[in-house]
Length: 406
Image 1 (tube, rainbow, N blue to C red):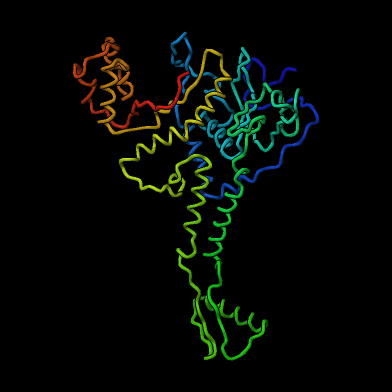
Image 2 (cartoon, rainbow, N blue to C red; image 1 turned 90 degrees about the vertical axis):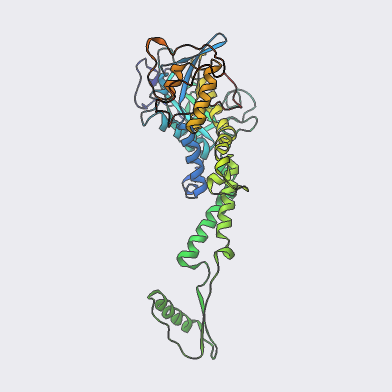
């Protein structure tokens, strides 16, 4: 069966298809909207999605043992969706993985060689995969995909799970696995709101020392007292009444500690440094270790996400092509450190003068003077363009350890 979105001419919207009937319905929805009311959960998704989506995505072609950077971006990463830009497309994919544990895309357009040129991310709550059979269709090796209860060919599904268990195709949802942690944070947040809005404990006691007051009279007295307090009017009562306000300090209430603990636990779930989500890191932050924190965040938090996405995207491209996120763009430094790195790269022949000038948004030298890569002796040539006064704000060409080449 040929699908309407496999025309040679690219489509710009998801068209209706002759769905097969039958199959299980979509699974029950996870209450993600409620979880997003908790600040650390929202912050975790925003931090991961924005960090990944803001990195440049570069395309390369393998040529023997060498790799060649391509200037032309594949169609899939030029205009991947009918809504938004590449940034928005990547942002949606990462948030789906963060909150649902899976990013599920539907191929809606292909080129003349049947490679995808558009992929729309679906709501994982409307997607179900059957992978519990021992053999054949519906097994781990041959899963059956359903969208809104209808079968979808596996070749039209782009699936990127985050945390998977052996023998299962569908990824584990962090919000389901750690529902107790999220619920505790939400309960603490609601309790603190009730405390300050309506009084987590009674605001005061009003006791009669001479006579017993039945419930009916107590309700009348309480209403009159409450009205006086809300109107900020003085309270007048006889000699046989005692009024004692109840006050609890923030430290005794433990609101701050509870919320910080919740943020720390959620940060641990996503592998994010707790201080980035308002949690407790156990160490003080200084100017000296801020840059190291950024490097560690890239290596230990973002790297697994980048590798997971790169592997999935590369399966959608011709075998000779692959994409990589330029993680170096996340790390910036002062001008003196940047120019010291340029000088070293030029002396060992890693960068030409024109490439260094390009990193500083400068035009190349005339007549090809800056195109050479010949290694230089240390101190043989001053750093190119130093003194042009245009050295601020560029990206440091640092290399992040821990990534393997393609």
